[in-house]
Amino acid sequence: MTVLTTERLSLVPFTDHHVDGLSAMNSDPEVMRYLSGRPETRDETVVFVERVKQRWSEFGYSWWSFIEKETGEIVGAGALQNLRRGATVSPDPTCPLEIGWRLRRDCWHKGMASEAARAIAGFAFDTVHADELYAVCHPDNVASINVMQRLGMQYTGLQTWYGKNLATYQTTAMR
Image (cartoon, rainbow, N blue to C red; front, side):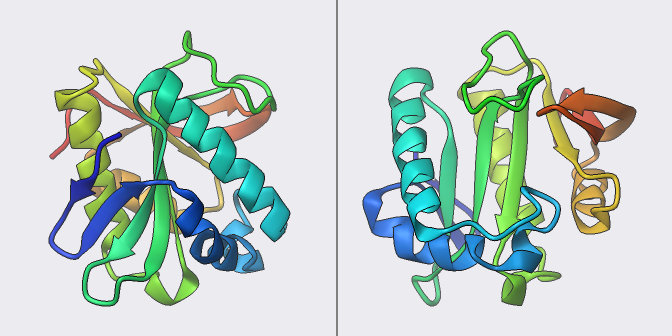
């Protein structure tokens, strides 16, 4: 499992010690608005962390907690994972790799999502040797679309992933 670092963040693969910080973020309805559409319970976060730890073992990539170096607090989370066509929780290794992120609401509009996404993309291209990366979001999620565009990703249209029509962006390199 790989720890990534940026100027302000340490990206650390999920551990049981991250449950409280992740649960606090995932229980915020505004954070989850475009993801699941509802706040996540602590029990759901515990299950999510267990699933992520298994994926790290199985695939060598999954979700990281974003830990702010200055405070030591979890300020977000991000992933390198395979997209899924349906609404299942099981990864589909035949689908392209996706980068994704979420941040605590008090950390929005500070450039942390772009900073972390660049580090994850670097890991995907340099370590996993991905040929391309995708990022998807709800079409109304302007903040995530702006991050995708800042990363130099190209819009490829609305596509069905996770059983939903999502704005889909793709790149073969990061700027």
